Length: 381
View 1 (cartoon, helix red, strand yellow):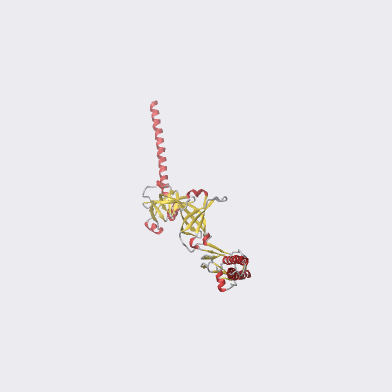
View 2: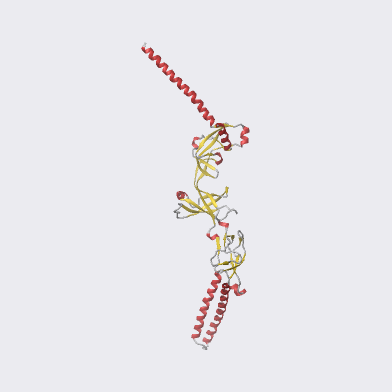
């Protein structure tokens, strides 16, 4: 009798546990189904067409690891000239305008200065005296040969000749430094004004003179910039230096136009690190030519460090929420949202670090992701 009672109690206990388990499963299964339904949304063909939804599959491509940095467009020192007078004077005329292109040798400004006239006068006087002394030496040598004069007189004449020769050479050098050909003075006479000419061809910038202004020696009149070979001065952080090398390609855009990208290449890297911001300068030669480029313009750049084969999706396939990224897969017209681990961005393609969770051949939404995500958010509400 006692065994019978124990047996009946055991059966009752087993039935109660089994019933509770079935109730739990019955509750959990609808909840799971509800969660799955909440993370997906479906559209008919008309909705797909209106939303312009496009799809793609994940591809294996070579992608470069990029280093983000910024910098400025610069002109090489040999492509930039500063116009400064060696002697001062009053500006007589100005022949340039800001942004104007000038050829090498073109007159920039003319200056009036009495000292400039005096320098030419001294040159002409020394040149005349020098020529006279050349003839005098020849005459003294002839007289000496005829024993009509002493050797001392000839030696004195030669000494005076050498003195005049050095004075003439000094006067010629002064005029040459000013950009004046001494032969032109001999042919055309004294020039009343000094013309400052362009040493290179390029565009005028930073004009700081006007007619009638007194210009001091060494004062900057303007700059000339040759834009044919511009470069970018990039600031590379110390932590990124091991991955940057001469020859690395660079993609950059102007801060004034974020959508247009240009190409450059690293040609040199500085050997010192700035103690304040822990950066090093890298020079990248611009390969694309554009008239919009101006020295001093700020740029955002990405240095391509290395290349590797990896799984990628178009950048448009990802949507960002806070610090997280998501993608949508298309399974028979049902769009499911999945978390995506975003890697390197290269030329419009994004590396997907968690690509292994997606079966081969998975179809992803590549266009219209924002619309799909918005409809899913409405559904969850």
